[in-house]
Structure formats: C-alpha cells, structure tokens
Amino acid sequence: MSAQRWRPSRLEVAIAVTFFGAAFLAASTGSVPIPQVTLNWRADAPAGYAPSFRAPAGGELAFVFIGSSRCVPSSHETLPPAVERLKLLLRDRAARSGRSFTTLGIARDWSVDAGLAHLGKFGRFDEVVAGRNWLNVGLLRYVWEDVPGQAATPQVLVLDRRLVDRGAPEAADGVVQDERLVTRLVGWEEIERWAARGAPLPHLPRVASPASFRESEDAQVMR
Image (cartoon, rainbow, N blue to C red):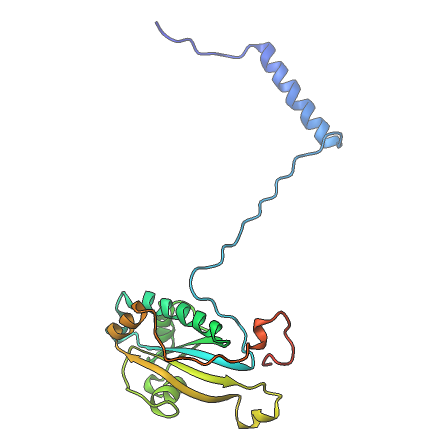
C-alpha cells in the first residue's frame, strides 16, 4: 500500500497567501512593528598571559625569555607551555608582593622576522627584541653587560627592580633603578623543571602597591 503525498488545496493556498500578504502590508504601513534581531557576540578574553600596558612607578618584577629560531632546544615543543606557565606564576607572585609585572622576549636571530616568528610561539610579551644576533640591545643588557650571564639559549631570567616616574627628581639617575638578578635558568630542561615546581624564588620583601593597582591613573603612573 503506497503512501499518498499531501498536496494543499487551492483554498489552503489562497488562505496562506492572504495571511502572509496581510502581515507584510501591516508591517510596511507601521501598524505592526517589524521584528528586529540584534546579535551581540561576546569576545572572550584570550587565554594565557596578557600585557597590562602599564608601567607604574614602584617595585616591578621582570621576566625575560631568550631564545632563537635556529636553536633546537629553543624550539622544543614542550617549552612554550612551560614559558607561558612561568609568566602566569610570576605575575601572581609579583602581585602578592606589591609589585607590577612585565615580560620581555629576546630572540637571538640575525633576521628580525625570524626572531619575531620564534617569539610568537611563546605567547604574548610586554616587549620584544629581535635582530642582530648576540649584539641586539636585549642581549647586550642581559648577557654581556649590565646583567652578565651565560651566552646560551634558551634561558630565562627574573629581575627585581624599581621604576621611577620620569618627572620625579630621582629620575636623573635613571627610570629603572636598583635592578638585581633574582634567578637565571639555562636550558629547556632546567626551565621546564622549574616551571613544574611552581617557579620557586627567594623571598621577595613586600613593597608598596604600585599606582596602577588602584582605580586612578594619576601622575604616579609613568608617562
């Protein structure tokens, strides 16, 4: 027994056409409001470390990552999540001790493009330096001159320092003052082990909360 297909009668078609026509006419004349649909897409905050875009006067903890696109250990697949974990752990540590926090990514590459692409694997940084190999300004500061250390990649440094407002009298001695190395780890295995242990650091004495931790953005925030 075959099923019969349902077909609307002429009367049913006429009724439907009349109904939809009347609805359209009423909407176009304004007697019936036309429904309006608004779509609001919620932009979820991206996961991982996000720069604060602030540099308040006061104590600051700085995390420095040094890598290279041509260095096999720097490209180890488990290193980027370890570095990202360190950013978050140290950011929380800084906040608990009343310090602001910043991150710096340094690429030991001749090519700026290759260096930036390499650092992009490690998430976001507040500041990046790439190009000119071992002679870029980041490596001059944190390997050769101001904070000398082993010339190797990858490595991470943690520095404790004080930021001075540029308009303050003491800024004559420099905006970044009293910078000291807290710890340096060299090699992807050592970095990963340190991250897995929760990034232990020597005791950081608590300092006054920086201005950016409050609601106002006044002259105490570095301009």
